[in-house]
Amino acid sequence: MKKVLIAVSLLATVTFGLAGCGSNSASKEASSTKVTSKNQDKISEYEGIIKTARDFNENGHYKASNKALNGIRIADLTKKGFGALKTEYFQIQKSNDAFLLKEGKKQNQVASSNGSTTNLNTNNSFSDFSKFVGDYSFYNYDPDRLQSDLIIDSDGTVVQENTDDTSFHGVATISSDSQGGILSYDVTSGTNNTKSINANVKIVVTWSNGQNETYYGYTSYDGDAVLTDGKSYDGDLVNEVWVQ
Image (cartoon, rainbow, N blue to C red):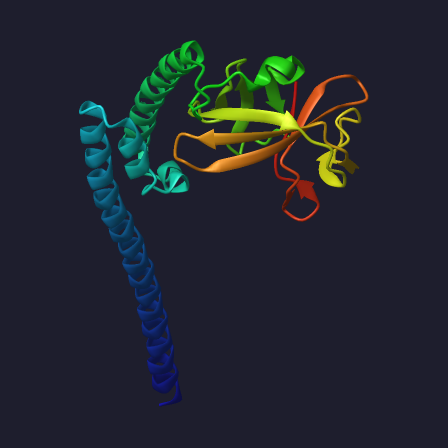
């Protein structure tokens, strides 16, 4: 009789264990389905935004097209299933920016000939600060972050090349500045050692999505032009530092 009871007890234990496994498996499957469904909803939402941005672009409303693209969170485009959207997003943005910069340069030429001081897309503010024109590399390079290279042209046009082969476009103005206590790296050390610097210039970039970003420029001990946004990142690091 005891042997029968033991056998029944063991069978119940095994059955309960299998039921538990099945329950965990079902739970994981339901969770996966929920995530997939959530992504699909987001993809559908972004497809609508892309269509709106594409229509604006095709009808010559480039600023409105870029404004529409602001409804897409770029970090989402790195997720599985978003590849096609990511490609089209940057294709539309690149087309918008090319036309906007072209229009800005034409307006600048007209303004110059008329003696106008209208605030335009491109400018000649870098004419007295040629040291800060050129190609920059992201100092604390990290393949998990977007920043790779930064190019500033003499007419103020700016291109940020990213680690995923995409790029951002904007226009910058530069002015003298002497602020102190701005956070940067000791770029001559090849380390992540931070330091406080005194700025020589302030560069304000207006990106094509309408957002502004400020950099402080100075000269390193090696004589290279350096840009920093002066913001802390991940505790004891600096958010963006660029070295020519």
